[in-house]
Image 1 (cartoon, rainbow, N blue to C red):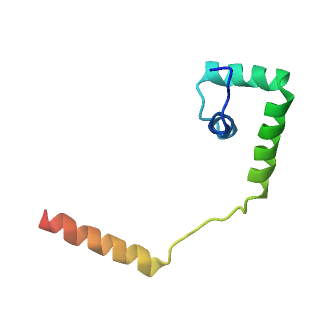
Image 2: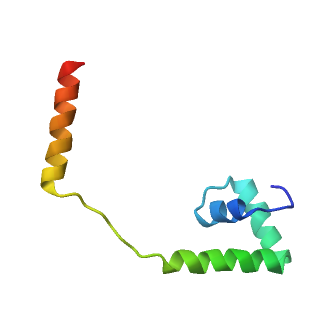
Image 3: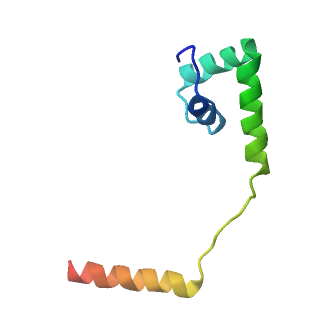
Length: 76
């Protein structure tokens, strides 16, 4: 992990998309850099404010997709 973290690095940390060594290095950097930690905490707060939505398609929509898939598979 480089010493110059980007917003992207913080987002990757938030969503657990960093390799273990990179995550540990960034966590250590967060402990020593208050501005960086403040940015990270703002991202944490922002993600907590996002609505927790779940989408489920209607049965007819699923049937249409499956029908289309069957037709395309039969043609191939």
